Image (cartoon, rainbow, N blue to C red):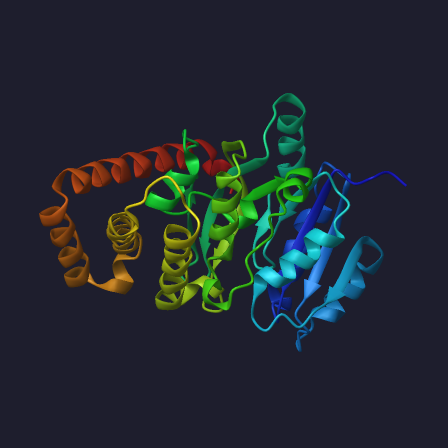
Length: 309
């Protein structure tokens, strides 16, 4: 039997209403040399019924992960036989040409991590926009630690040989839940993985009320826990850990308030901007400029690919 080129790992829990679309978006790929691994946290909805429809095409495992999605993904990685691990959350889905497009890049260039742009869909609002990721920079580990995550799980694939060689898996610390992917990308960058970012949107990331990251307070707390852990226990590029933590925290707070304007409120947003400007004026001006540039870039990409949606 031919060894799969991609292993698609889909963790799920009570997401049967979304899972079917996620699975079909893989099964309808123009590139066919892949395996699908679904890791189910013992769902009590119609997940098993959905899986039975495609039983012959799916490796289906159950696990008690105690709410730690990284545990499910790690089981998928251990089972996977493909050269590349492709992550897909059960409430997200891919464009039909995703694997074909990425396969061509893996044949032409040498990378360990590839991430593409995504359409961001809002279930309750019934609208969408586009989000690009990256860019890759020298000392990428420090960049990710100082400036936050620059990748998306469902938009990323990782070379399995590199995971095996570096012994990197998702951290199963319960304090990292919803940001365990950020921890994975930090560790990959720390081990000098080569990252490549594709501007073309090849998937859709769905935001809805049941999304793990929809609880912003818990999500930001988990993100901060990941950053604090790396700053005080792992990174070695600076000995002044308290200063690095203060700088990183200010940046992450500013980023959070910009991207979640409606949920944090105008007053809190302005208060954070003023606080950062007083303490770090040049940094704040630079960040606002970079944010506006990214918004413009994403909008231009959105206009270019809008006809695909």
